[in-house]
Image (cartoon, rainbow, N blue to C red; front, top):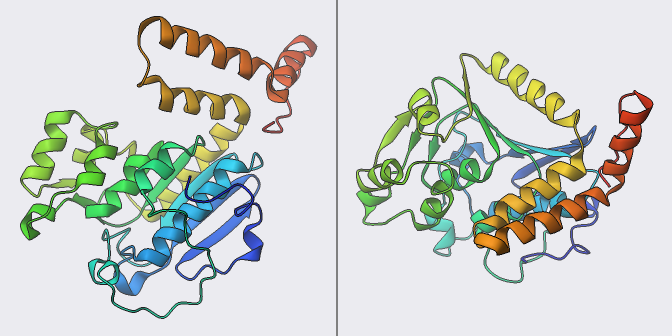
Amino acid sequence: MFYTAEQVADLSNYRFEFLKVDFNANVLRLTLNRPEKKNAMNPTLLNELAFALTHAKHNNSVWAVVIGAEGNIFCAGADLLSFAGAATEQSSNIPDPSEPIRLVEVFAGLYKPCIARVHGSVYAGGFMIISGCTHVISVEQATFSLPEVKRGLWPFQVMAGLMNVMPHRTMLDLCMRAGSLTAQQAKDAGLVSQVVATVEELDSAVNTLVDDIKQYSPAAIRKGLEAYHNMGAKQGSDLHLYMFEMLGKTIETKDAQEGLKAFMEKRQPVWTGE
C-alpha cells in the first residue's frame, strides 16, 4: 500500500536514522531510537517503521516482530513540530511512501505476530503501535495516557486501533477525559496482554512468548491473522465462504503439508514459513 514488495525486499540497502533494526532467528526486532525526543514519531521515524513492517509482511522468513524503544519513554506520540514542517537533520535514505502513512493500516495488514515490549510510558499516538500489535507486554510502572483533548484535539487514528482491543465505552471515556491508565488497568481494559514487575522480567516474558509462537506454523498463523483482519467486513454466508476459502489456501501451504507429514511420521515438524 505505502511501499511495494520490491522496495522493501532487502533492508540492508537502507540507512535507518531513528529505528534500530535487527533480524535474527526469524525474528525482526525494531527499536524506536529517538530517546532525546521521548521517541515521538516524526515523519522520518514513521516512514522507517512503516517500511520495516512492510518488509516483515512480505518476507516469509520473518515469523514474528518485536517492537521496543530506547530511553525512558516507550513513545510520546507524534512530534507535532516536525509534522508542522520544522526541519530535522537526518541521514535516512528510506524512500518516500506512495501516500501519507496511516500506521493503523500498516499494522492491520502485517499478518504476523507482533509484540510490543513496553518498558516505559506510552502517550497519544504511541497507542497506534500498541493497539496494532497482537501482544503487549508491559512493566508495571508504565502508564498509558491520551492527552489530546487537553490540546483541543481528538485521537482519531488511535481510536480506530483501540476499537479492536478495548470495550468501546472504556475507549471513549479514555479519549474524552484525557485519561491515564496504569499497566494493570490497561491489562484489565484489554490494551495490555501481560504485566511484569521489572525490565529483566520483561525481556524474559517477551523471549518466552517468541519461543512459544515459533513452535507453530508461521504460514498458518499468517493466514489466520489475514482472515481475522478481513472477517469484519463479511457477514453470514459470505463470511463462512471466505473462511472455507482461507482454509483451502492454508492447506496448500508447505507448512501444512509438513505438519500433516510430521503427524503421520510421529515427529516434530520443521517449519519454513512457506
